[in-house]
Image 1 (cartoon, rainbow, N blue to C red):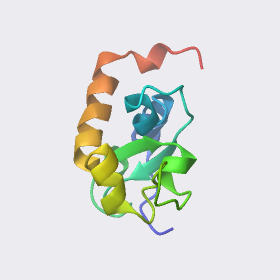
Image 2 (cartoon, rainbow, N blue to C red; image 1 turned 90 degrees about the horizontal axis):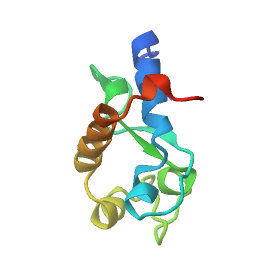
Image 3 (cartoon, rainbow, N blue to C red; image 1 turned 90 degrees about the vertical axis):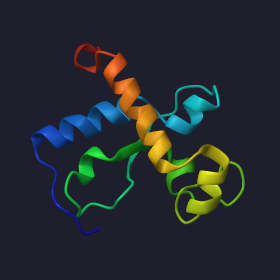
Image 4 (cartoon, one colour; image 1 turned 180 degrees about the horizontal axis):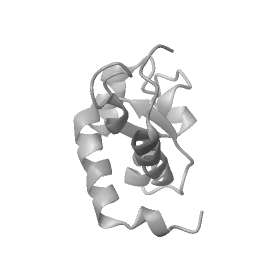
Length: 106
């Protein structure tokens, strides 16, 4: 996949984002589900690595158009079911600022 290689600060940010676990599963009060990084504006725009969501495999790229709806290739269905990527990003950023992820034991 084409895109700008993340620098050290961007890698740290994306690691912190992934430690939240899948934001959709979290919002559905499901158990912690390990997350992949989803870039909401691709990987080539400025600050693209800071505009990322933590999504589990099922919600990111499994390819299902029914629950669990995956973001790829079903963006419209995904956003209708779980909220816009921008709203989810706001929530992720709020969570990052309310937790001390630098001191987690992993």
